[in-house]
Length: 130
Image (cartoon, rainbow, N blue to C red; front, side, top):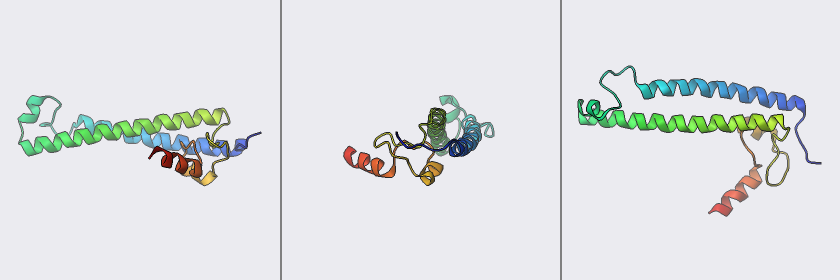
């Protein structure tokens, strides 16, 4: 039978993940505010508004918008991965390496709660991709 974490430890992991998800949710709200850019009346999403300001300012605004969209995408992907980690907790599969079926160390699971591979398997997997 494969090793797995105790119900007590799984509760601890669940609490940590839910706290992270709450933080990410707040971060995504802040990023949305940056995307909407309510504080700058000259900024907008239409091309007309971009060209109505200095070209350098328009470039900076455009760069900030792209950066915010990238950050939103990244945070959203992380949030989804944490949701999947919660599903693994429900199935009592959390912290089990999907390659070697070994138990991933608790320290790693606390730092990277969406991890699905132990460090050795992750390293071997990365080396095989190159």
